[in-house]
Length: 416
Image (tube, rainbow, N blue to C red; front, side):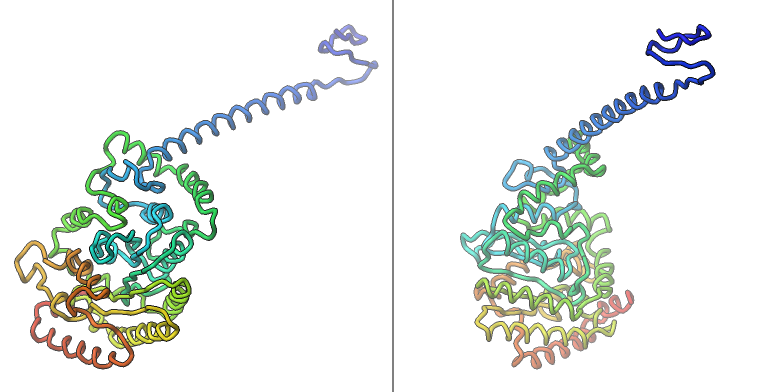
C-alpha cells in the first residue's frame, strides 16, 4: 500500500506523493465504471439479438401471412376472411411457380377468373390480381412476372375508376418486385425484416393458439384465385348481398380514374410484353349495370367513352407492330350485368354477382371463353372501326335501362 507523508494510505497502487499535493480517486472510479458499462452494453446487445432471433425464427416458421410459401402444407391452413399481405405471398409464389398464363387486375379479376379452367389446357395458370389494385399495381405485378417467368399469355382486367397510378393495394411494397436474378436472396432479407414486426408476432401466437381465424383458404391454395368463402363472410357481415349493393356502387363512383399517366404505363407494359412475344387480352370488367349507371349520373360518361377509345387505339397500335393484343368490353348494360338486385328479386343471392362490384366464377369462365374463341359472342371487342357503333348501342341500352329499370335507377341516384 502507498503511504502519504502524513501516514494516510492510498489504494494499493504505488503513488508518488509530495506534501501539499491533492490526490483524486476519480480516474480509478471512472475506469471501473467504463468496464462495467461495456459489460452492460454487451449483455444488453446479446439479449436483444437472442430475442430478435427468436421472434424472427418464430414468425418465419409459422408464417401467419404465407409470405414465403408455395406448394407447402401451410397453404391448406384456414385463414381469416381478410387476406393480409396478399401481395407478399403472391409475388413469392409467382416466382416459384413460374406460370405460363398470368391474370392481373383488381379483386374483380382475383375473385372472378378461375385459374383452373379448360380454356388453357395443361398450361400453368396463376391469378396474380390483387384486392384494391390500381392500374399501377397491376403493371408492377406484370414487371415482376416478366422478370421471374416466361409468359405466354397475360389476361388483364381493367375498369375506369381504378385506372390510375395510385397505390390501390397498400400492402404491395415495390420492394417485392423482382429486378434481377438475385430475387430470392433479396427476398429472404425482406422476409426476415418483416418477420421482426409486432403484428406478425402477435398473429403467429394466435396461429399457435388456434385463435387466428379459420374462414377460408389462402388464394395461394387456389393458384391465386380468391376463395369465395372469404367474400361470403364479408357480405354476411354487411347484412347480405342486398345490403352490400349500394355501398359498392358508391365506391365505384369515387374512383379517381381513368388518368392519362395510367394509359402511358399500360402502353409501356404492353411494349415489354409484346417484345417478349406474349399474347395479351385486356378486358373491361363486367361490373353490375348499376355501376355503369352511377358513372353516367356522376357526369363521368364522356370520360368513360374517351377511355374506351384510347384502349381500342392502343391495342390497334400494338397489333400493327405484330403483337397479339386485343381488348374486350363486358361492362355496361347487357343480359349478364342487368341481373335484378336482391332488393327487387327477393332472393338472398344473385346468380352472376356477389354484389354490384364482383362477379362470380360462372361469369369469369364466360369471359375467358369469349376472349379465347371458345364461347358465345357476349362482350364486344373494342376496335377503332367498330367502337362508334358499340358506344351508340350502349347509350341506347342505358336509356332503356332507365325506363325499364326505374327502381334500380332510383337506387343509383340515391347514392350520389
